[in-house]
Length: 385
Image 1: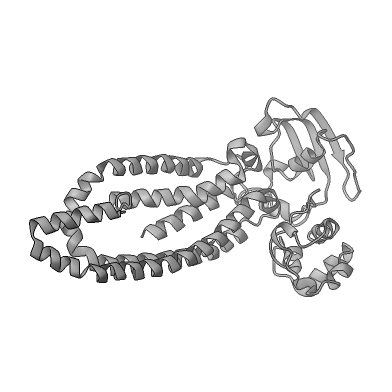
Image 2: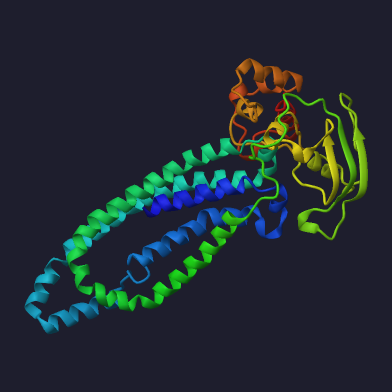
């Protein structure tokens, strides 16, 4: 039950995170490291607190040689005959304990490896939230998260079952005799674990209770079959949520004609990328309106609108997978290989791809480390096609 609860908490929090506006991730306390810590660690602390409430805390389960010698001496003084009998079976008890420990260690290593893959996926989601939002791929990553969680959950359940069944059956008789005293002795550590669990619960529920300012999954809103591409910005005032004292735009008005190539030129920090962020509705302006094809961008269904807008970032964002998968990323429907090759040809990326040993099945590595900067840029350009 504890492993299922941990998995459920992680799925629920990740689902909620994928609905937040991009500006929320810009804030200092919402870095990718902090969020991944909540997903990986806070849920486990909640599990530990639950174990404490059920009398299964590990806080005082450890023993040491001095304690063992004290107990042995005391047992021999009280009843030396019975003490000798118990001493005779101690080697078997120690052997059983170490065999069980070795088995659990092997299972724990499997669970750790599986959990590492799941944590890597969550870190990738948080680090690339803008790209995921732009391509409306939240549901795809939730599916991948569910698959990644299946491994750790399976291994942890297996480990818990073996530890609980075998070890529980072996020591149940002894534990029943000391349970009352142990519960009293553990009162201090139990209080600490409950307090820690309450603090992390507050952190988790704080995320779940947050109401996102820009909801991408709302079914309401205009859902056009295509966009002409006429873009207008009217009297825009804007500052990023994480830097509200720094105004980027004060009364900006801009018109971008459809079916024309328009370049925004300016020094670093002048707001070129901010214009794109507002058109994609990663952020809402403090004042003013962004209009696409005569309609306020806030009246559109975001998932539908973003399917008609292609974004090629200054720094290409690639996911760990094959070149084919990265080019096909964001497609609303499954695409065949001919379409992928066609997109690569348009982006002038086909020649270098076929020159690789595995061609379109070449793995890009974490954030595309296996490719050069120009190659990554070529794949990023091919992606919208």
